[in-house]
Amino acid sequence: MEDKDEAMADAPAAEEPQPPSPKDVVDVLAELGYAYRAPEGGSVSDERLVQLDNDTKGFEWKGQANYDAVAAACALYCKTRLVLACGLMETALGDARCWARPDDAGPDAPIVFLVCGSFPGGSAGVWGRSLCVNATLRDGAMFDYVERCRAEKWNVVIADPNVSEESGRSVEGSETPHRHLSTLYSRAIHPDETRPILIVAHSYGASAVAFLFKDKPACRERIVGVALTDGCALYGSILKEEVPPSGSARLEKTKELVPAAFADDADANAAYACVARNFVSSPEPAGTPLPGRGPFESVSAGHTSHPATTHAATEEVFAFLKEKLAETK
Image 1 (cartoon, rainbow, N blue to C red):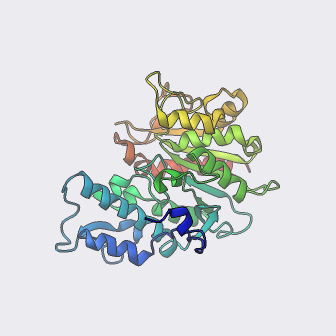
Image 2: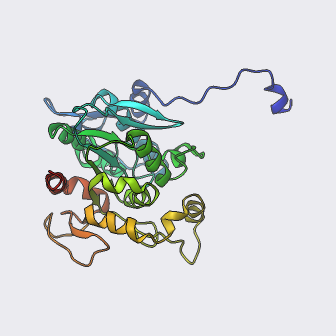
């Protein structure tokens, strides 16, 4: 066998793998026996995964490997629909991506960042992958939030913080969710920007936002409201992550790449806590105050299931964001 490096020496450079097209994703779902369908007159948020052979039936368990394949295809489907159904533009951040139309609602409109949780449950366009498989895209995807932001005349930017883990390689500027959000903020927000900025972050997205407050001190003057939905850290706290005593290769690598996420920063933490509310999993009605549930003002999301908190808290989240915006006027 020829040496690989020698054989490729005079060959043209290989192109970077391209993301699958919308048709490819639909074909993959079809090969697995599924398609997304909405009731007549419904929007993309009303779509539900159904079996091609019987559209009255949804996902059917056929083992973990099959579930993983179906769930991965569902997450990719949601990414393609950010362009097709929401009209957002896929924008390069080096080898990473975000989805946005920064002036969609006008050059003076507030900007809202939507930040998912950790992989595999979260990805661009997806709050909870399991809900995209087993419920509707209103329950598990970000489309309803995009639609509501537009109704409020807010500009939307969707992060893709898990790109390194999804692609199986380190993506420069997006090596961790923390770095991705910091890179995205730097690219999306001009240093002289004066528009108010809002953030909705689910699960581990809360820790990425904590790093942003530490890494980009100027953001503390611009971010006026952060709605967390069951925000958490993998270990330690949102404001100061830790590596567990038993060790964690993932967190040890994260600490190496973003040490500030594992350090105290009183000014950053105070600024974050001042504008944040955490909508946590709870059986209490949505919006019920829950004192003592972490470093932020905490209220019930209105659901006990972690992946379901973002959808369950939707009305309360938008009421909070509008309240924080009103405080700036």
